[in-house]
Structures are given as structure tokens and as C-alpha cells.
Image (cartoon, rainbow, N blue to C red; front, side, top):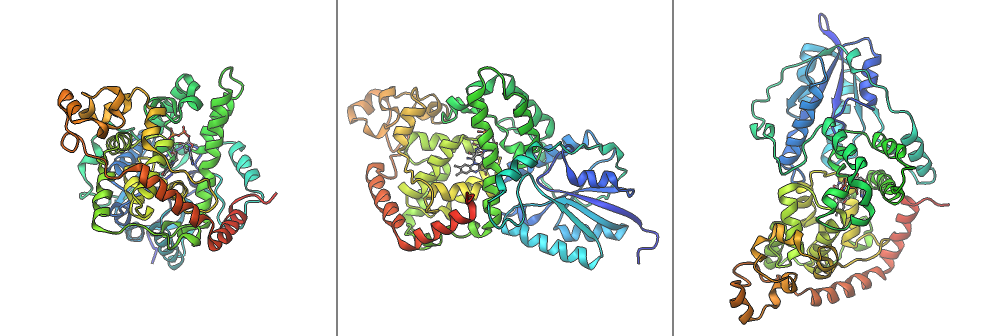
Length: 484
Ligand SMILES: Cc1cc2nc3c(=O)[nH]c(=O)nc-3n(C[C@H](O)[C@H](O)[C@H](O)COP(=O)(O)OP(=O)(O)OC[C@H]3O[C@@H](n4cnc5c(N)ncnc54)[C@H](O)[C@@H]3O)c2cc1C
């Protein structure tokens, strides 16, 4: 059956779009066989509501960047993976597939099972290597932290892709949108070259106030590392970033920002590990006690959901954050938490109805971090502090001059600072003076957060006391926290 067909390996690229610190590429380098580098734009993901055009543009840019350093291009398919493999197999004899393990959505897990069946049927050896410090499977966290340190401090994989004899396959990609090849200057561009520029720039100067400005929606755009899309799509390994951080560890004046950043790099894998161990989190609260948590499902809640998604809730900071995200793909941690709090606590809308909207606008969408964080902020874990953010207070504390709000809600620009955070408090006389009408120029608030705060607080604390919530909280702690 394989007569006259060239024997090859396949390196299947997914969320590991780089040529350095890349174990599957190393396996290909060590083999005598030629290798086909494969990326597949899969309909199951292209059509999935978690993803949007911004992600595929980022991937396209990442592949272009990789191609610049390769003797022959990465073969790109637009099909399901098994069909792509069958097409390759019609020209070549695939000996091995090398790839990183993926901790992803249920759709990719199902796809992996189909790929495994295909590999077994065709006597193809599929070798998967670990992604970062995530352990698959992981029974408990007893030695997890030690393993994280070990993995992150180990030497980077010393890749020499020039050793690979690359072969290619021409798939039909005529239906991939041309717009993915057009840069969007409002968003971070993909690729390892960009990742390194952004990382160096952070350590050159802009990171010095990282810890101080991390919660400010405007300043954090510069003072945070902005490495999340590059880590999420694997343009750089977490290990490379961590080792870069360690090289700056003793730098004068950088102690606090580096400690804060180092913890977050640890959390990155911690949350992905959590999702790996409890992937049902995509569909249900991790704490089974919250399965029947009451949410609104009336027609008004549909409209409120749209107001939240489009940045038209009448709460300036909420709207500014959502509009910023919709346009640029980025907002800092605190504001992400506030958006979820507004959705689940003030609007009392089920977290599952908002989770894919935020995923689709976060350029850095990473299923493991996203679901774990979303549930934490939605208050359905039973183990984390309950936080119900007051959006007006958040604006006063973190955008005191209203500059971020004005950047994204320019319709408020005629208002004095005193009412900028609460435009609904304008008197009729003031509306005339400022030439501004609430409900016309800017939406009236869709809820009264003073009232919804009280209701949410009562609801969340009474559920927190339930036996089923407490029992499952103990199980969650046993599973995801070190026992000693
Ligand atoms: C509801 C919600 C959803 C989120 N969804 C995602 C997501 O899909 N993808 C994602 O990468 N982050 C997510 N985060 C975490 C965090 O907000 C972002 O990682 C961070 O804002 C990205 O900006 P940065 O790269 O400048 O981060 P920095 O503060 O510079 O941190 C550096 C890196 O550490 C990791 N990190 C930082 N904060 C966290 C955290 N709280 N938990 C886990 N890892 C962290 C990220 O990889 C980040 O790139 C989410 C947070 C919330 C509240």
C-alpha cells in the first residue's frame, strides 16, 4: 500500500506557533525522515462562538512570521484534521505525528480522539509532549509546584529547524478569508518576533510600575506585560518568558513588579491545570452546589445581555471596558473581573451566556484560564472570595480623571468630571446646560446597582452557606490545592 510513497513525519502545530523551545520540532530534528509542518484551520473552531476573526488573523500572522525562518513553508489546511491527514497520507507515508498536548475545549478533545483512532488505524505513532508545566493526567497537586519550578528552570529546548528537511502539501485553502491577511492596527499582531519585541520593551522600561498600575484600565495597557496573546498562541513559551524574568531578578527598583509578574506566570499553568482536571467546567459550575443557582431568563435579560456585549449598559466604566475590548482585544485583569461581576451579579445573567462573548473578543483567549477565572468571578466555585464590584467606585478609584472612559465613551465628553461616572444623576437643568440627554446621547443605566448589589450579596452569601456548596468546596480544595 505504501509502495513508492515517501516516509515522513508530521509536526502538527496548534497553540504552539513558534520555532524555539519546541519539543515536537526537536523530535522532528532528531529524526532521519523529512517532516511536514502542518497547521489546520479547523471548521469546528472557526465556527465555534469562542473564536472570532481576530484569533485567526493572529494565527495567520504567527505562521507568516515562522515561515520567514523556514526553508519551506508550513503546510496550511482548511478542513478537519483527519481529512487533512488522509490527504497527506495519499501522497506520503506518515510515520509519526509530533505535537504538543492541548488543554482545550470539548471540541478539540473530541477531535483528538478521532486523530488517535486515525493514527492507530494507519499504524502512525502519535507523540504528544507536555505544554508548559501542565500535567496530564494530574491526580492531585502535592508535587505540582515543584514540577512547575523544574519545568520552568530547565534548559530551553535547543531547536535547529534548519536540520529538518521540510516537505509540503498543497491543500485547498481558497475559502480562507483574505481579511485575515490584512493587519488590524488596533490589535496586537501575532508572531514570535512581535512577542520578543513586546517582552524586551516591558523589561527595558514600561514594566517598572507593573504592580502599581495593574488595576488601572488606561495605564495598564502599557505597564502590564501584554504577553498574553503570545503565550496563549504559543509565540513564545512560558518558560522562555519566565527565564527572561529571572535574568532581571536582581535589578534595582524592579523587585515588586517582578514578584507580581512571577506569581502570574505560575497562575497561568495553575488555572490551565484546573481546567485540565475538570474540563466539565466548560458546561457546569466546578462546584456542583451551584448547578441550580437562579438566573434571569426573561426577554429583558436578552436585551441586557446585548447591552453588556456592546458596551451600552449606561455604566460608563463597564461600557468603556467592553468597547475597548471589542475594538482592541485587550483589557486588564481587574476590568475583566468587573465585567463578569456586572453580568452575573448585577444583571443576574448566567455566566454561561457571557463566557463565549468575552472569549471571542479576548485576543488572548486561553480556555483553561478563561473558564476558571470566569467561574471565580461569577462566584460559583465556593472557594474564592465573593467580589461584587461597584462600577462607579471602580471608576473613581482606577480612572479618577475619567480619561479611559472618555477615550471609549466620547458621547460623555461634554459632561463635567463630577458627573462623568454617574451621568444619570444630571438634573433636567444640567442636561440643558451641557446639551446632553440621558437615554438619547448615552443609555440610561439598565439596572440600579445599589439595589442589585444588595440582592446579589444576599443571594451569593446564602448559597455559599449551603451544605452541597460547602461539601463540594472541600473536594475542590483537595483536588486543586497542595495538601501540605
Ligand atoms: C474573567 C477573566 C477571564 C480571563 N481570561 C483569560 C484568557 O482567556 N487568557 C488569558 O491569558 N488570561 C485571561 N485572564 C487573566 C488575565 O486577565 C490576563 O492574563 C491578563 O490580563 C493578560 O494581560 P497581560 O499579558 O498584560 O498580563 P500580565 O499581568 O502582564 O501577566 C503576564 C501573564 O501572566 C498570566 N496571567 C496574568 N494574570 C493571570 C491570571 N489572573 N490568571 C492566570 N494567568 C494570568 C498571563 O499569561 C499573562 O499574559 C482572565 C481574567 C478574567 C478575570
